[in-house]
Length: 126
Image 1 (cartoon, rainbow, N blue to C red):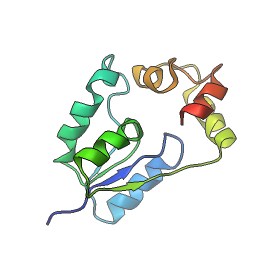
Image 2: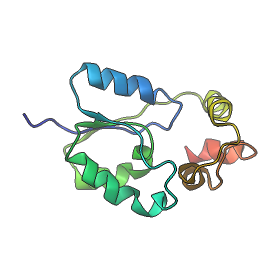
Image 3: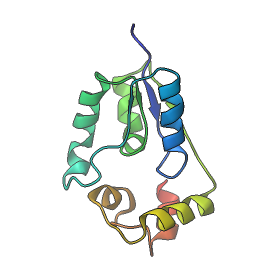
Image 4: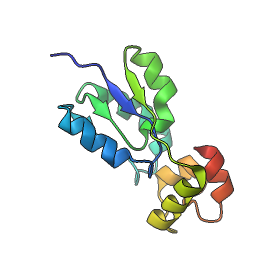
């Protein structure tokens, strides 16, 4: 059976794991995050994401929020779910969870490997 694609496009720490669990319960084949440690993630994410779309029905966490415009163009019958939380709460969660640990994915998102010290920029990023 062909299922409409569903993309969770909320940033990390906004309930993406819960969204993935709900989609699993509803019977979707769900793809989570990928590429956080890949040095070339900013350059390869779209091609990798497009390749994954044929294998799954639903998608959540990074890098999906960064690609939603391109995904909407390539998969026009898809649905998008935006998970959010208040900016101050979100950055507090991100700082507490990630700390100073840097990844290429977070460099792409925040312009630096960690949100610490860039909290106001990170609020605007999301």
